[in-house]
Every structure is written in C-alpha cells, then in structure tokens.
Image 1 (cartoon, rainbow, N blue to C red):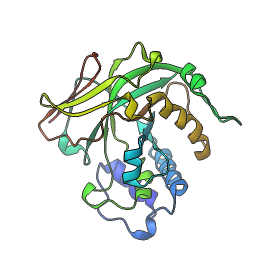
Image 2 (image 1 turned 90 degrees about the vertical axis):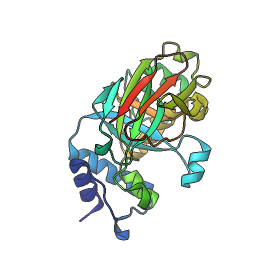
Image 3 (image 1 turned 180 degrees about the vertical axis):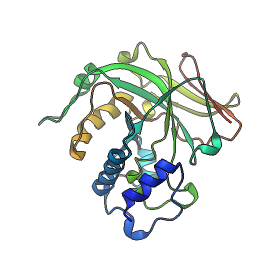
Image 4 (image 1 turned 30 degrees about the horizontal axis):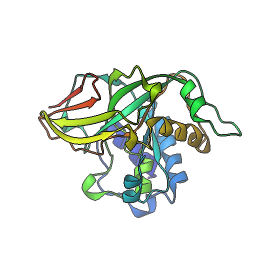
Length: 252
C-alpha cells in the first residue's frame, strides 16, 4: 500500500494513521506535495482553496522548514458561531488567520507576481479560524514530509467578519484567541510574514512549481497570527480581530 492510499482511507474514514512505515515517508517536499495532490484528486471533495503555514521564523525554525508550507483546503466554509464535535476532530488545533478570497486567476508566468498585482486580484479579506487536523497522532508524528503529504495538516475553516479596510494594511491588526472568556493567545497580522498579503504573494509564486495556481473564487488562509492552541473539549473558543465581531466556536 502506498502513502496516498493510507491518507485517502484516513480522510474518508475520519481517522488517523497510527504508525507510518518508514519506507512510505516522502523523500522531500516535492514528493510530499505530489502525494497530497494525488489524495486531493482521488477524494473528489469540493475544494475550498488553500492554506499556508509556517509563515514566521519561529515556526519554521521549530519545524526545520526552509520556507512556508501549503496544502489544499476543502469545504464547506463554516460560519460563526459554530458548534464542533470535539470527538470527531483529529487532534484539533485552533489558529486565527486572515482569509483572502480571489477575484481572478493568478496563472503561471515568467516573472513573479508582485504585492500590488496580487492585492488587485483579491475580492475580499475576512477574519477566520482554521481548526487544523492531522491524519497522524500528535503524540507520534512521523517526519515532516509526511505532514506535507497530509495537506500540511489541513482541517476545517470558520469564516468570520469581513475586514473592510484591509488595503490600508493588516500588520497592525491585533488578534486575540480566548477560551471560555480568558485570553490565551495574542498576536497580530505582523506575525504572518510581516503582513498576511505577503503570504498570499508567496503562495501565488510557489504553486506553479507544484503544477497548479491560484484561481478565482478560491479562499486562502494565510497562516496563524496567534500561534497554535489545542481547544479543550466542552470549551467555547473565540477569536477577535481588532474591533470586529468575535468568531465563536463551541467544541462540544
């Protein structure tokens, strides 16, 4: 059995792969992304867009990554407030992120896409949360290339309010994640490559190396602004971006 077969079954059954044979670990990032693309194609699930992770130096150093990472995301896009069955989630991690929706394609070309060009292709930006999941147990993670093959730990996506003035810059926007009313994580847009738009630019220029590109209508979650938080079962977790209405998630 190949790695794509294992991950495909795990996705369809909503379970984890307890132990990964060493010979199935991808040899490098390109091989891992190829497995992830095969799994996505064979699943046949409606794509939501893409996720980006590892968008700050601390995270990349911890994971020994030379660059950010990406993965396919799948719908549906959940609306806040939302209730999630904690027992059905696979080692969930809450990450408050900026979500970009594309108004037009950004196809491969000879010169890199610029920040101004990518910004002009954006239809809207929202506050949001990725509830990341992993098809491998957190307590026994395989080498990191296997995580890339698992869509970089893509999970479920909760959409919050639109950010009307995002073109004025997102770096200074404060972001707070709270559990049952107690703040647990603090950050800002600056945690995401200095500004979340740069994460989107990076992805626009990285995807062609993987044989694909950004398309109109896709959503991109650009990386956590607050680090990672494991939500306790039975807790209400909220994410607040500046003065916007909070995103509410109940983990039943």
